Amino acid sequence: MITFQSSASPDVVMLKNLAQYLLSLMGKRLGARGVILHEELPDAIARLETAIQEDSVERTTLDALHHSPQVVSDADRGALSHRAWPLLDMMRAADKHDANVIWGL
Image 1 (cartoon, rainbow, N blue to C red):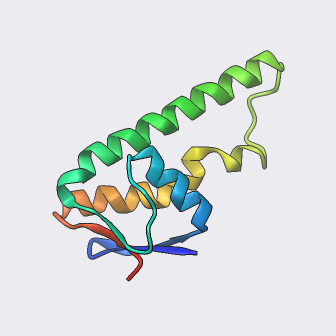
Image 2 (cartoon, rainbow, N blue to C red):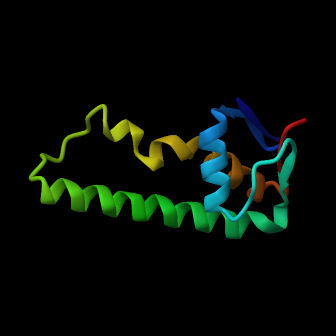
């Protein structure tokens, strides 16, 4: 488990492999400790939002190819948007309050 912390919001706890994946989307590496500096947040947020949008397009395309109905199912809960929103929300709050996001302390 990895705990992300910021003075701008409550802690966000997630599985290590998900944290590693999300950080890689933002151009960061998961180490024992790390930080997303306030100055890095706009770019990190944009990268994560782009990845979420691309995931959504891919899911919609696959649903259309397989003629799947557009209903929210248990499988949709695994969408990147559902898994990433707590960290993305923390990053937005940190950006708004001139704070950093840290992990591993």
